[in-house]
Amino acid sequence: MQIGVLTALYQNLSFTQVLDKVKVMGITAVELGTGAYAPNPHIDLDRMLENKAAREAYQEELDDRGMIISALSCHGNPIHPNPEEAKNADTIYRKTVKLAMLMEIPVVNTFSGLPSGCPGDRMPNWVTCPWPPHFLEILKYQWDEIGIPYWKDATVFAADHGIKIGIEIHPGMLIFNVETMLRMRNEAGPALGANFDPSHLFWNGVDVIAAIRKLSSAIHHVHGKDCYIDHQNIAINGCNDHKPYEQIANRSWTFRTIGYGHDLKFWKDFVSALRLVGYDYVISIEHEDAMMSKEEGLAKAVALLKEAVITDHPGEMYWA
Image (cartoon, rainbow, N blue to C red):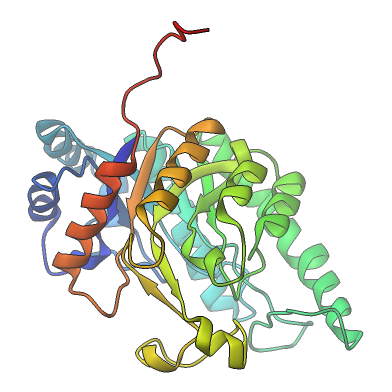
């Protein structure tokens, strides 16, 4: 298993500067954003698609440092009710899949997106409960008429290019928990799976280890990000919280660097559960800790993961 990083935290640095900076920390994989909601300072999608020499130059820089690109990320909303926004996200997704194929990068990460509640709505509509009855009507429209048809087609497109999709399970999206992830995978096919980010599950009360066991081979990529649960605020207001992220003292939860929401024992269990279900690829650190600088946050995350990750293949059970 390798330690990686989503390079969006170093938007002021070039691709090679990022590689040099993170290599000395012990990071051996990078995840690059290609557009939509994802910042894309480290790869020019159109240029790389058109220019074989540029792709080869990127690969040479990686090879020289013994590093890989674990995934390309194009988090967007390809089923947005605004046709222009949906088309832009879908175009970036398809270009990203094509580039991943050309560069032999196995995974493209994205969001499932979220449509409107009915034809003619102008904004996405996230349903969180079954009553009043119109919520179930919304869900039927979102899944049967928009979400499933789109992701069936998008998954075939990825599979035809030899690429796996990593959907980030995220609140405010059609796929926001394990059940919705597996439902869409069952409809669309096995090329669609999860970019497993535990931070979004923690604050929903999910047992992350149980979620890993349930998803099993549907996990295509993993993000390393922690979440601090403020039980005092949850006791008053519950888990759903739309206050701005900077209002940390008043929020029910907040993103933290690895180790500042859950301890080393949890992260050892996390890594062990991933290995148990056959995932032995990259844990890509996503730094979004508002209480810590990116330098300190990344360094502390790497230090903890070095203690937790299992790098060698298991040996023979000589005792059995």
